[in-house]
Length: 225
Image (cartoon, rainbow, N blue to C red):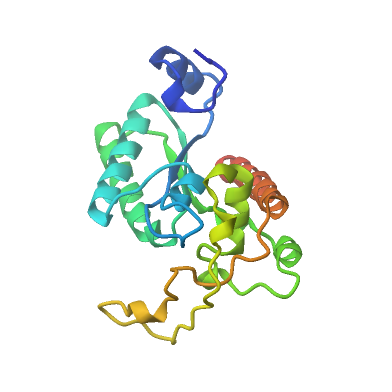
């Protein structure tokens, strides 16, 4: 057994308990989704980039609530929820709030603090300028496009089919939403803007910046009074 791993599911309960009680490190809980990412990326792209799989809204709220409550019971005092799917945000907030209420009710002395973040918020305009020399189209159109494809080429190259990059797009959304959703607003491939120009070098540039700036945020967030 690798006792130096950073993955909780690869630790014995003894090593996990020792890690939590020694130095009180932050625990990172990745949350993603299963959804289409065009013909060239796997359904689990959001999950792979965040590190985990999310379910539907009610289930996700319940899962996060349970996780927050149980981590508090384990003695974790710093929990970071890393979101890889935009629409998860509101359900994560609900789950965090309910979980903290449960934890406080069970133990009024509970010291758990929770940080929620979305990894794309840690990409700077300077780095995006390098990745998009002709101009960044905006995060709203970056679904299965250059950012996600490049990061997947860096993290999981064997799962990317560059030979299947679609030619359609970009999507042209009006300034309002309709329900049921209008599928004809989305290009047939499901890709919202072109992924051409994606490469692992760009993915590494993005991944390194995100990791560095997230680490800084975690350090700052949990030390700030």
